Image (cartoon, rainbow, N blue to C red; front, side, top):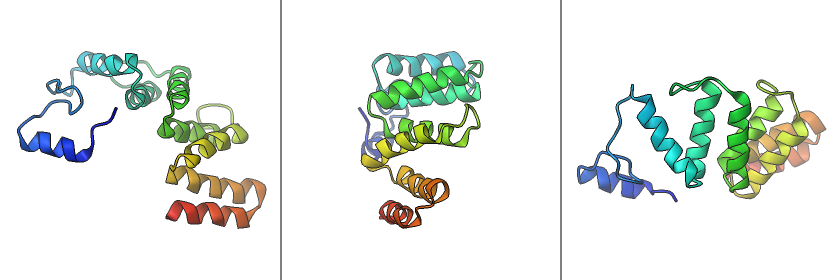
Length: 150
């Protein structure tokens, strides 16, 4: 589902300037409808990166979309169910910070745990910080931090 950086570089060296995944020509920066249509096309196919991006567009109110926190969280939850570690990380941050939704540290930590188990280093780091601050278990926190540093 992803195009590696080497393939993107090779395509650019051959003069291809469009989307590295579908080869569609680049859209203008101010052409929000085209950008949104391209993202939606990938979302409809279950592409977790596109679902995460659409969630980000809703949370910030970009590409002509109105700011909609509920819709963004729905999208990230769907992406997390499809296995996206980035979606788990974002959801963990949202629930633990309490900035956009009511604070729910246990729910946020669960998302970070799921992402950390799949190798997401920043989620492992956040688990260490949360363990030390909320539980006072600095010994376990150091273990999380050491794993994240590797």
